Amino acid sequence: MSSAPFKCLAASTLLILSSQVHASTLFPVLNADKTFGVQVKIQTFTPADAAQIKTAGFGFVRFGVWTDSLGGAAYQKQISDAFAVAKAAGLPVLMTIRSTEALTDAPGNAGELAAAGTQFAQSVVALEQSYRTQLVAIEIWNEPDLEKYWPTGSFETTFVPFMSAMCQSLGSKAHTTPLIGFGFSKAPSAGSASTVALNRIVSEYPKCLSAISYHPYGLTGTQISTAQAFIQQNFHLPGVISEWGVSALSSNGGVDGQASKVSTFISDVEKLKIPLTSVYEWKNSESGGNDRERNFGLQTSDGQPKPAQLAVQTLLNAQ
Image (tube, rainbow, N blue to C red):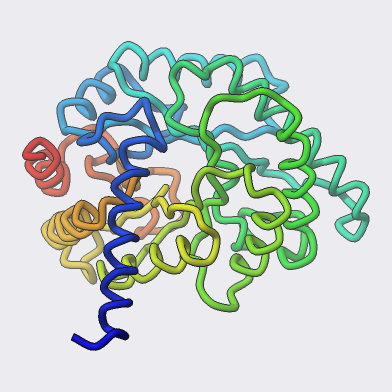
């Protein structure tokens, strides 16, 4: 064997071993065989859902919390009720935190972006203090590389100042929950906007994040493996999948095609030893803007299991 292939093999082996180590230590509240979770909505998450999610073999649930709504008592109760439902079922929570409104009216003002980052960090700390015993991790933001989920203006100019201020502020505060970010809609790759941003944030604040989270919709197992290697090699952090799913559209083969694709995805991710993976989503969403968005659920909106749920249950309970 020549030295070049040997070096490639050695690097691949080290990456796999590194992933295995992270899988057992990065998220200590998860059992080694319970690294798959599923997304739920706090508004509709019920004890019956939680019991069925547990039976299906999932190890945690993921749901979002919006900082711009935290001032409302009714919203605060929705959050606490969702945590209570998860706790009763023995399901820890991956909590994704973001704002649904623009962070500032002056996106060109670096000072205002920094102030917003500091204020956001205060919300993260408050939520962590309230729910830390139940948390798998706190995920900062969801798909900021899409304009829909980053309403503050140009991602290229506003994201780094905001997140740098957040990381700087969090660095001075005690928190024990792993922090992951930033839920990118696409895996970071060479030259991508997410990679440019991460290079700056991770180099300046190397202890801010415990893992890089992304959403590999449409990627094959080989492509996900490549993304994992890129993240590890460039940022010296593990990659985790905080959202992936497939809609039961006729173009995807309907409900049976959805089940097949979900099964393939879970099998591929298991082989890669990814420390945390969250499937999107538990139930169909009636509030989705189109047929695709309404049909990602492993169940129908009224709680009837689809073939995908049965496929997941078979795979996850065989671990």
